[in-house]
Length: 198
Image (cartoon, rainbow, N blue to C red; front, side):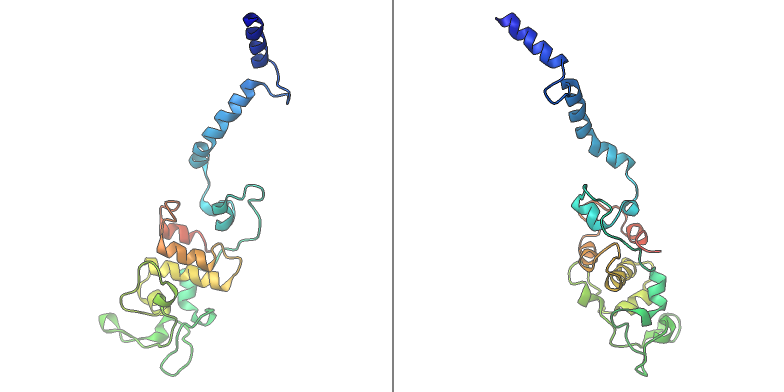
């Protein structure tokens, strides 16, 4: 009786199962599934090579290219085109909208002062994460802090507010400011944001 059981066991291991898949194939599949996250992390493309952030973070495997995503405009564009802002960039002393950073700066060098008023305040939009201790407007930060983290996150926010198909939504931009690594998924904050615009 035990010999029949062993023969039956051996025949099950070496013959196709009811579904037509041998146990060795099942073992290969199990091994492949366990190794795939490692393989995917080794050969992964840049974050936006695949699709929108929301698609990638939600793990939408059935339709990873769902929706159409657009790259946004650069920090330089937003800095020099305040008239295109979806929120107030502020006003010059004569109550007109500035055309560039130069319209808002009076003086030169260390004695230069910001003369535009009523622009959207950085701290009003980014209520979690680091705050601007001077309470400056976003336009002032773009013009006076080039290359800073604030410089980059402001451009991302303006892109999100302007284009509903921008790679990041407004809430994702704010979440990114509160946690610049998105829980360890992003290793270079500025490079990541630079990859979201042209």
